[in-house]
Amino acid sequence: MMEVRTKLLVADDEPVLRDNLRYAFEAEGYAVEAAVDGEAAWAAYLAAKPELLLLDIKMPLADGLEVLRRVRAVDPVVPVMFLTSKDEEFDRVLGLELGADDYLCKPFSIRELRARVRA
Image (spheres, one colour):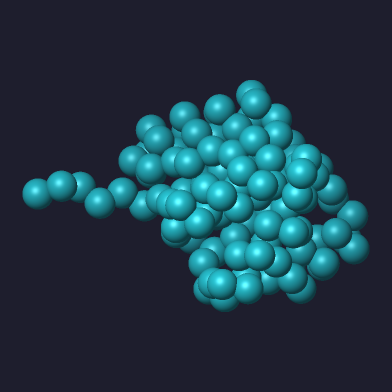
């Protein structure tokens, strides 16, 4: 019988962070799609239908807020977490009001992120 792995989309324009997140979650058994910008994240979402999205807000081509708007237009329940350097209260509230389920400011601990993903 084939193992079914949870699909996760990581979208961040910082290559080191994106690669580290891919490695960390693949080591835990997730199937990880990675995207370098907002348009790539949207295309990966449509192709892979991940069960969780980890989105940077500040990305080229389409920011994380735009990706979230597009995703919420077709899927109101898939969990979305923002990973971002934007740590002002206004930005956190805006992300949550647009439909994000969680918001983690950079720099963050991989252990904390993994705990939030499991939750």
